[in-house]
Length: 285
Ligand code: NDP
Image (cartoon, rainbow, N blue to C red):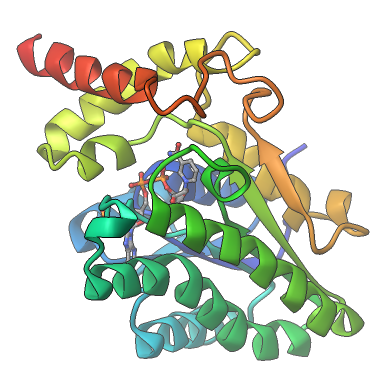
């Protein structure tokens, strides 16, 4: 099948990399036209060029409301309307423990991971309503579902994003606008290297290596890939998901039901060790 999004128009934030990029590629392969909205101009323009005429790039910092409004307006101007808004952009944000928290860092992280999806919903809904309905997606995280995964600000922001989706689904269901989130487990993307402050080159190499090493973190014995999230987004955005709204679709190889490492044990830093060993190995290679 290659027409599940025939004639649809999507805005995908954070689509110059990782899951957003994989989703842009899959959506176009399924007949959609996609606006890649990302803060990284070089990567975003390259991605749009490689995908072809059905993709276009706009520089968009999702912490800025005007940038989100401009992305929605550009999708309408260039492609004639909007059917799908995927609020996916994200980064680790502050890694501080609560006792050491700087309030500006806390506010920034929540602005990136909770306020931005809210603004995406705010600006996309009126345009999607004009089309008689459509889909809004948000990338949440396994860190927002249970304790002991990731750091506080990130986890709180992702938990809030899940509740945002439930509230929006209630508000917009009558207009046939479905709102769902996707909850990834560990997915091999450059986000981990970026959070560790390594170069883009090392972050990319780490993502390749993590695709193998993440196999150890959950019952299904393979690493999670950006394409796994893209497939979930396609399912929710297409007619296959037409009776689904307000959910958080977990895509994690079974990690939340049974992690292979005890992520709730504060003395266990198996994931941190895996990331640091990967950084060391790809840097030395
Ligand atoms: P990537 O780093 O590969 O992609 C995220 C993209 O979002 C990057 O291009 C990044 O740019 C961009 N971005 C960051 N901040 C902004 C901003 N203010 N405005 C616009 N774009 C921005 O990461 P992933 O694909 O892994 O992450 C996608 C989403 O998935 C995120 O929301 C993340 O929190 C979530 N997630 C990831 C998991 C994983 O295991 N990878 C697990 C669970 C959730 P830049 O390089 O400049 O930061």
